[in-house]
Amino acid sequence: MIRFCALCGSATTERVPEDDNRLRAVCNACGHINYVNPKIVAGCLPVWEDGRILLARRAIEPRYGRWTLPAGFMEVNESVAEGAAREALEEANARVEITDLYTVYSIPHISQVYMMFRAKLLDANVSPGSESLEVKLVTEDEIPWDDLAFAMVRLTLQHFIADRKAGTFVTRFGDIRPPER
Image 1 (cartoon, rainbow, N blue to C red):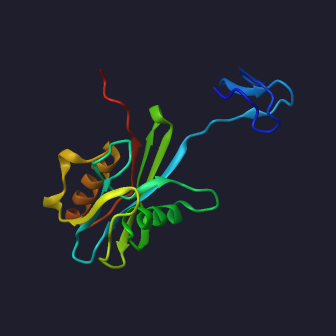
Image 2: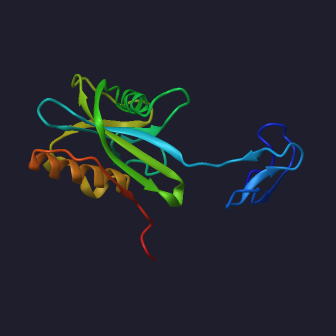
């Protein structure tokens, strides 16, 4: 819970504001409602001219050492597509042309929404950025399925492979929930 107001710094109380239906941190002094909303993660599936896919091996937690597609939290004053292109540059020194929105996955238990784009890799001169141990261009057969970082990456790659074989790309969306225990 947010303990202090984002506007005036006074203490907050968790309560359901009038005309609302959820507990919120409401300022005791100025009445400001401090909303907490999901984070948007922007990323892309960069593809080189020969059909190989760009993957990056994570140099940060969570999932240190696992393979992923370039993605990360959006920044203020950027579009989702701009964020996806920026993440490709930061993680893999990859210059990309964003082509279309490809997958959207809500992950409610961690309050994140992933928006992944298909992208054309503008050149094959890629290298690890500060958040990557290594990067590589892989064929479908070289995807390290057992060493992927996130379910969203697995699903996006599975859809891409199926769509490429079918010859048509369809935007997909869904929810990713934690496994039942």
